[in-house]
Structure formats: C-alpha cells, structure tokens
Length: 481
Image (tube, rainbow, N blue to C red):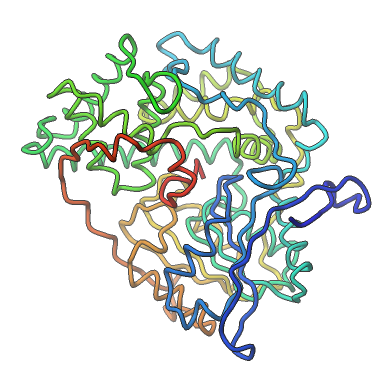
C-alpha cells in the first residue's frame, strides 16, 4: 500500500493509499530495464492481474528484464479507501433501457440517486479522482520505486492515463505503449456517441456471421433476420424475465442487452451469443442465456469501479445537464445505431446529476513535448475506442509510431496470439526497436479470422460460472473503456 496525497495541490493534507503489486525482474542487474507500470482501462479497473498475465505473454528473455507493476487506481478495488456508492446498482432486473418502454423516469431517478449517494459520503474524494490525479499517483509509484524513469503499457482509458502522465512528467518516461486509444481531445459525451455507432457496426457483423451459420443456429439466412430474432427475445423477456442465479435478481431486457454488447469488445464471444438466441428460440432453453449473463454481464460483489468511472468522466467535461437535450440528441443517434445507444446513455446518465462537472483539470492538452517515441496500437473496427481516437493521438504525439490492425475488432489488441502485433510490442520492449514504415501508419497487421460457428451446449461446469469470473478473466474485465 502506497500512501499518496488526496489532493496533490495540498501534499501535506489528507492521505489515501494505492494498492500496488510487483513481479520483480529476474535478469542480471546489468540487463534490467526498470519498472513497467500497467493499466487495463475502465476508468477504475484493477491492474493487479496484469504483471503475471502480460509478462507471461512475451518471451522470457524480455519479460525477465522488467519489474512488472500493477496497481488499483485511487478509490477502487483494494486501494484505500474504496469508494462505493450503491453496491446493488446493477442488480437485475433493472428498468428497460429503451425509452419507448416508458422507463425514462425510472432511469433518471435511479441515476440521480446514484450521484446523490456518491456525493453524500464521498464529496471530499470525488473531485480528486480524475485522470490527472491518477497520473500523479503513477509518479508517486515511480518515486517509491526509486527510479528516474518508468515504462508504461495502458489499454483503453489507460491510453488517456498514459498520455496524461507523459504530458505531466515527460522526463520520467522511458518507453510507452498505448493500446486501443481514446482520442486526446474528444469529450466523453461525444466519445460515447462514437461508441454507439461502432457497436452497431459490430452487432451487424455478428448478425451477418450468424446468418452464414444458419445450419447450426437456425436464426435465419440474412443479418436482418438474425437481428429480428434478437429483438424478439428481448421483447419476450420484458414480460417473462429469466432467473439470473447465481447472480442476484432476474435477466430482463436490460440484462439481456448487457450480455450481448460485449461481443463488440471480443468477437470470440459470438458462438456463445448465437447459442443464447438459438437455444431460447428453437429449444426454449434459457440455460445458455443464464451462463452468458453470469460470465460476461452480471454485477460483481461490490461497487468496485463504477464510482471511479463516473468521477473521471463526469468531472472532466461539461456534460449536458438538460434531459430534454439528451432525449432529442440521443434519439438522433438511436435512429442509426439502435443496438447500443440507450444502453450506453443510461450507463452514463449519472453525469447529468454529478456534483463536480465542469472541472477541466483532468483533460490536459496532449502535445507530446519532451516524450520519447510512443508506440500506438489500434484496430480499425474497435467499438469501445474507435479508430479516430488513434489517429488523433498519433497526430498529437510527434515521433509516435502507429500500428494498425486493419479489419481487427478486439478492444485492446495485444496478447491475443497475433504475432505481427505481439512481436512489435516485444521488439520495442526488448531494445526500443520501432516499426520502420514511413507513412502515417508505420505498420499494418492482419486481423484474426472469425470464430468457427459452433453450438455451445451448456454443461454442468458452465452452470457454475458466476460473477467472480469477471475479476479474473482478462477478456471480461475491460469495462466500458
């Protein structure tokens, strides 16, 4: 546990503690390259799983030269204090996301109460959970380790954290890798609209993939037919929700949507998603839905990251406060991207009521001044951090090198076994080698093939999967960003 100031402007004031872990370098001293700090995104997701996981994904002769450092962002998980506002906020069955179902009032009241509950107990902490605050915590970790420079790998919101650290402390950066990139200037409200449009594209791709496998899933031979079947299941769940056990509550339409949008993060889930629809509609079997919900979407045991998510996003931009504006604006987005728009809107609705909006301290202008070359990785079909963010970050960081997976759709594209991507990362960590392409894109890598269609039959072991998996499965914990 590392003690740091709550407010870095008052370094002798209230202190909090950051949970840190380390997998030490084992190479000879003269071969060691210092610490590499790791962040998976969120905002607010734990990084404590990352040292063992990522170091195990690259050759030992490189991994052994680094001290691998994981940490829990301030106010989250095992850091102290752990901010919690309503540990049952995500329990099912939640109000329907679709405004056509007349649930807007319920969601507005629920979102306002969540913001009020946070402020009631944590008003002293919430204004100090921005990206910049977390970046300063990273520099406190650097000082505690007794080194002049650190290395960094960050994915998703971790790219915002890393670039912010580089802006604040450029002389302390040795090497930096940003994977699946948040644009350096876009505000969070507009970023969510980009997500809505990209998630629609990924859902359309899933439907087209499923339609090609009609002999397995029996959901129709064109994408429109599959999407119609998806909405058919959602409609039935409005009146006949499914038991969510071992997760609390029921699986209604909101929980159903949450089970499916993860396919935009990881297309390897598509066989299980298609099985959920097929089993429900052709066999009246709800077990695959229950398993998929518990594996990918069920709430955890506490409010580990959602307060941090809100405290970062709501505080760093001037969000619209008027529900009438949201209703009109989001309806326009929903008209072209109905799969995810209202789901995403209600996930972020607490920002309408968050008491600390408008403080711009957390969104620094990123110039890259004084930084060494930064290595950027981005898939063109990433739904959570859309491709324009990588283009903007590359432009903002002179000397950076952009590696693009053309047609790729993983969110956080390293460590899935793609040698073109992983070997580029390894070469950079080994000795600073960067891709040599002279164009705007320094290197292009091919995407992974689509998964093989298969009916994922429920098994006794699968039925035992519960929310705890989300804390240990790297493919299930990246959160919204």
